[in-house]
Image (cartoon, rainbow, N blue to C red; front, side, top):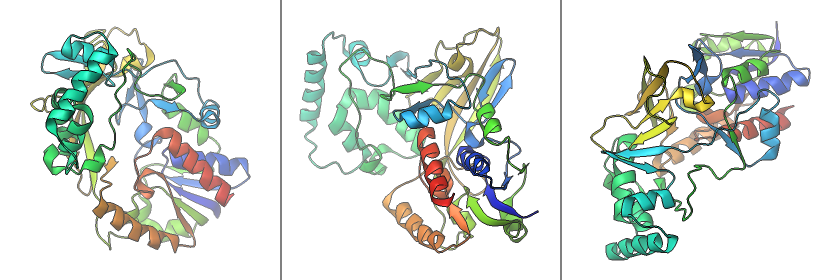
Length: 366
């Protein structure tokens, strides 16, 4: 059979495109390298708990059009992301707000917090930050930086903060209200029953979905099956890395079920002490206010990416962005292939931005 579209990748971007293409009467073949759909938002039900296999995913957006779109496929609960940071034996609320400052300094008013932060910044006398450490210190002062930023960031990037570029932290929002809601977006929640069901519904009308299928290993055969290709894999891998390899950070998870109904009292706890090897622990049941008798936790370990690993976060420094631009120019010359998604665009996307980008490609293509 000849298809109108071959969609490489059954993650959110590819699923949205397939769904919209089918609505417009187009035939679609979807191929996916992994043995499951939904990409990094894949959820697996274990003893009644939706386990986010590739890390915590909280849907949030201020775009009503995107919120209405995703709500076609699931009912969302009223989960609000309010992570906790643990530094040694101290617990702090995130994002940085009056609860954080009150715990850290024993103060009560926004004015007291502002004066402490301003005094610490003034003492440092940093005018032109040369690295991430100086950038963070010039924004939040020494106490917040050393307890809540330094260790976590160094684990996340695998480098000393003095060796990281300042652009990674362009701003660090300080809230002088007692508000632990991490996101400012108007709409926020977790789909009841997990994200996999959303992608299942999006792909329900696709002509065929092939799992465990590596498009790049049999590219000529698959290309011959369709008039157009929507490619959501790594852009440098598509071109055989011929201009060089783009850098990513990867994440490794240790997941276990525990014989307790409540391990940490919160869905997300960040471990900001450098001596703790993992960056955070996710307790999955709290995303859906679960009452199950056991619980499932995942410890997250950040690592350097190498070929064969799962790429998570693009390292969008000047060198990698310049290399991506060279690959993008090659991509623009492809008549049959369109590149999209997190890996195709070498960009860290929130889920609402993935949907918006996929819908934009739908408008251009369909």
